[in-house]
Image (cartoon, rainbow, N blue to C red; front, side, top):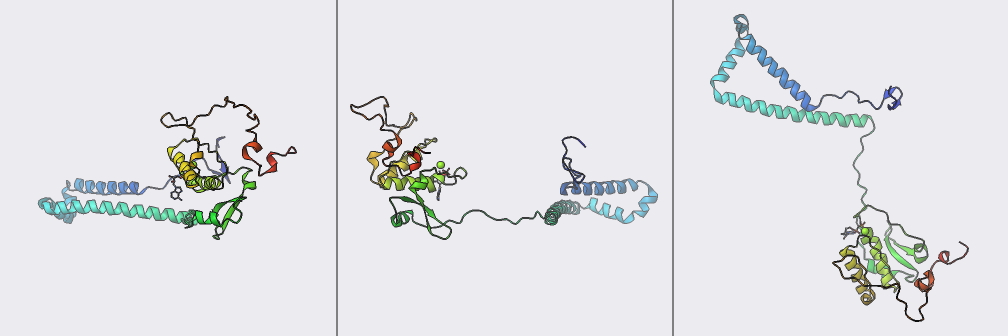
Length: 262
Ligand SMILES: Nc1ncnc2c1ncn2[C@@H]1O[C@H](COP(=O)(O)OP(=O)(O)O)[C@@H](O)[C@H]1O
Ligand SMILES: [Mg+2]
């Protein structure tokens, strides 16, 4: 027992159990056996006493050698047989594997975890939002009921977790940003990707909300036009506290961020 080996009830899990033969192995073994048999028969023909006993084989052999069409047909038949045997063995091996899985309780049926697509109008949901000033629409629940996210809950951070390309930006972040634009709220988007697509969609959403002229787009991409901002430039009588959170956002929706007790 090596120190790196794992043992369960005396079985060494780290060492490979001897594998059964693969279909290709069985096919090779069969070809070798058939080839050896033919080679032995050919050898036996050299001894007159044995050649007599092998009369039927000799007759067949001479017939095949004399008629090339028969030789060709036999060659084709052999090729087809080899293919059929190989496929048969593969199917047998797959069947055995399935049976082994079933016996071991590992034969899982295929199930999809994809959510079925659902037709709905975000615009209609937003219009029907009963408290549009305090909450935004997230989407529909499994039962088809609208799901709302209150501004208060949302101010405590929102995580959207899914794999890349699954629709986080399109299905969650954009609808939230759009509703904020629509409600006249401030929207600050930091896009690490800096993709033109995101930039243009944000501009389109702002335009749809009638606020395109208020969009300021800052990009480090030298091939794109960017707005500029000089943080050192102070106009006379500027309030140095202007960027303090409550000042920036107006009345905070959540005391958590302004309370001195936290
Ligand atoms: N419901 C949808 N219907 C059609 N295309 C979609 C949908 N959701 C996302 N997409 C497309 O899939 C791509 C990836 O979506 P995106 O929201 O950028 O994913 P993520 O932000 O999760 O990486 C985008 O090109 C987007 O247009
Ligand atoms: Mg994204």
